[in-house]
Image (tube, rainbow, N blue to C red; front, side):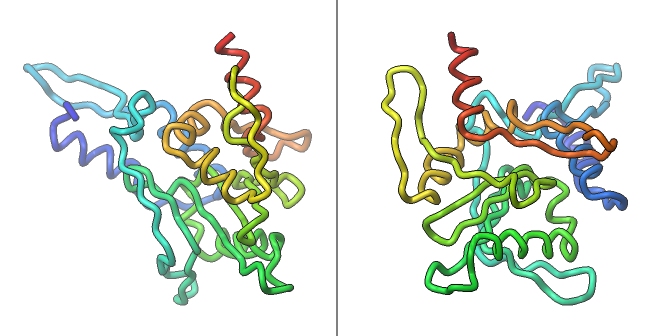
Length: 225
């Protein structure tokens, strides 16, 4: 809020500039900006100042703007269009994509939703440069995964609150578990800040990892203790 307008404009240009190359590499570069801020320089009081402009306010969740958009049309690289079911924007940044399937359709299962996301990654890759979490659901069952996760790495979010003194809450409705347990603003910001990482596998390929529910609650309980 205390940056001069020209510095804000420079931050926006840095974050939204067109780029090419490997999607996961671009995603990693974006995450560094999301996690640590965007370095920006400007003149103030006769001197040049350089600061880290934060894209999210991790300390005050209510200071951010959270918007869920249903059925947003996005033009593909081939001139057609794709319409993801739900995109969650925080401060204008599309950070979470949910693909939902009809539970009454035998062919529309969770893996079909996962496969749909793989198509989106090819045809509307720019949507996923800032992506931090993918969610698939058939209305009851639900799984979460990272941008690079294969189907076996998509996992359920089983509890809402497992902090000290709280009883474990079973969720037969796994989608409700994700929405109420992970996508609540303050929980999502904590998750994005401390439970996302990139590393190289044994073959040297870049992979992105997002914590499972027991890792999230376990680490937070350990830190609190």
